[in-house]
Each structure stands twice: as C-alpha cells, then as structure tokens.
Length: 251
Image (cartoon, rainbow, N blue to C red; front, side, top):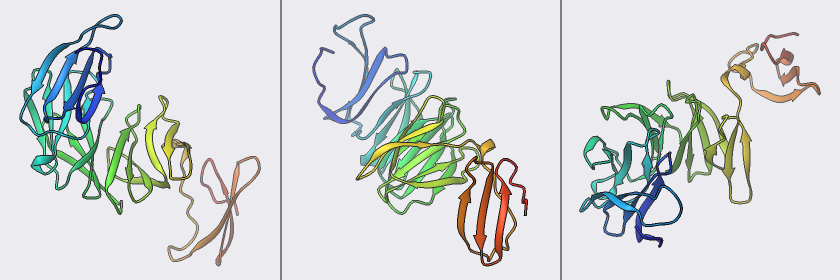
C-alpha cells in the first residue's frame, strides 16, 4: 500500500499495536495491510475479502488478531474474521449497524444498530448476551471503558446512555454524544450541537441510592452542602438530610 488515501466504501481502523491497517474499499472488499515497521514506505496486502458488499465500521480486537466488519447488504450482519479472512462468528441484526466496540477483554463485542438498540455479543460463539434498550432513535456509536465495567451508547435522539456490560442495566442517561472514555474511565468525551467537552464518570463505589420516601413521593429539590458531605432533598413529605458517602438518612 503506497502513501495515498484509499478509496473507502466504509470504515477503517488500525490494529492496537499499529502494525496493521484495515479498511473497506469502494467495491465492498475488506483489505488488511501490514505496515512498514519504521518510517514511511509501502505496506503489504495481507488479506482481501472480495465480493462481500461490506460497508460501515471496521474494528480490530484488543489482541489485534480478529476483525469485526459489517455487511449491510445482508440486513446488518456483523462478521468476526481472523487475519486470514476466515469467518469466526456471524452476528445478525434487524437493521444496519453504525458502530462497533470491543470489550477490553476481547470476549465481548458491542454493536450500535439502527433499530434503536445496542447489543452485546459473545465474540467467541456469536451468542447474543444482552440487548441495551432505551434510546428513541438510531444508535449511532458505542464505546467501552478501559476497565471493562462500563459501556456507552449514543443515539440520534441526542442522548448518551451508560450501561453495565454484565447486567445490561442502564446506569445514567445524559445529553450529547459520548465518543470515547479516558484511559482511567474517569471521563467520557462528548459532543452536542452547541457544545463539546467531557462528562465526569462516577464509579459504582461512588454512587449511592438514598431511601426515605414512599415510591409515590415526588422529590422536587436537591442540593449539596458546600463541603460535599451532605445532600438535602425536599418533597411534599418533608425535607431530608443524607450522608453522601453512606446514603444514610441523618434527619
């Protein structure tokens, strides 16, 4: 591969070690190139899967020995292949797939689908583990935290949702398009129509659920003390004061 822009028909991606580049050409063929070890030069074509009508994202697995690719002509079929082009698993979807993200342990693959759902798959056997349902529009992007305990999905409904990859439980929903977690999972970069920046992400150990009202009670006011140790809540049933670190009701 010479140093010129490829004629892309879909996504592209580097392997984690930077030694390979995979992309989908205009013809729908998936091509994987070995890159020069040092400096500019001509890459060597390693794999070419022709006639598959591929498009959309391409993603290397964390160890760099597998690729996830999309075949939209087949209604959103995602294929996992090895570097020799052998198909290892097929993941069927009911709509086109817009995004792919590998879990850091390499055993799970997260997909973003136009049917308004994100999906979590076993990358080894192709089994569907979890359906992440809640968005009101196409899911357009997904990403996984480096620690493996958080995944994020972004939709054209204008929201980003954080999920547990183990239970499928939705943890939080926020405005904007989440793009990528920081290396320590403390931040999630986002963009919106009128802004861009980053969300600060709390760990499960930092989150507490205070209990003290009936389920029918609507809480209409919340405020933290200046030192962050106390949380005050107001409702028709009265005002409550909580210890933030333990979620214990003080009064």
